[in-house]
Length: 460
Image (cartoon, rainbow, N blue to C red; front, side):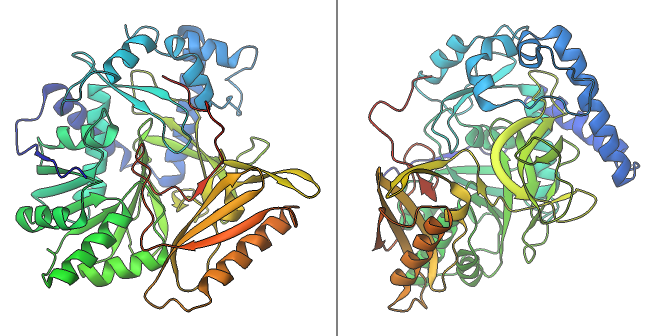
């Protein structure tokens, strides 16, 4: 395993990033005087106004909207497949092409490298395994970074000086770019998410971070490593990113670190979307100083009733270059308040579908029913489709796991299959593991993994 770490250190903030910081602070100060309900109405009008302008100025949006009128309430949704297929059209005017992003992404990685003077470029597959070129103007990137610092870091630790990021540090990735440019604001150390927990513990004990940002399974593994070594972890503000934070994980992380983790929800395409301000409440306050966040039902209509699941759609109002208007990120969540300011944690993805061959024929099963199984004694689990009619369920037991936990989990999964119309013909096996392994591409522990026939993945 890699054990490399890089120290960004405290440095002068890059000029364009600093300009983004200043713009975002000024905008948020203006926004603070606007009542919450009015903010949302203003954001909705801004989306429609920008959509009309982009339809006339941008070839990508002109193609997407076609004969549809973005002046109406229902501006057409931008799908990931549109960005992937028509990137050069959407990026028109930037001087950047899909081929240039692909060439840049294929170069040897260097921390802080960027496409050109003004642009950061990434190749993102997220949780879908479908390659997507991502482009940010450095100034816009600074705006999103300032919003994250103000809420995710300074909101809980106004005195924070040192931050440790444990993530993907060997590739062109939004996370390590964020942390590199944050080096102008904090002392930052970056460590490899695939390194052994014992090595990462050495980094934690040496750096003594005020803030730790990483995956929940890493936070838990660090707590276990510290307990085995008999050392105390520093009193740090814990930011859990990239994966679903499970109740058993949160309990163990809190016990090991002495403080609970806060969920932070973002995508490389949009930047930060929501932040868990109260670690005891499973909800995310949306960054309304960056976006208009919407939830849509299967018919594309807005969901405004608290507790009703909908597909997450984000309009990036802070971006001057390559703005995303009503971009569907692929997650499903629900509102927690009538004012539409607080989201649930994502319930799962609506882009992941298992196609299972059952006794009555082929059934398409979305991720959500399988993602939401809760069994006492199970810390977290993963459903992997191993063939057209077979599933493997791997699970980590909690310290309180009973002998029958695996059987109970299998029965729960079989019950979900039956409810979806697949009550026979699919074999479900259960495997108990000490720890689920993260995917080597994304660094995430993917909860539901479809069967991938040979040749499925496409190059960027």
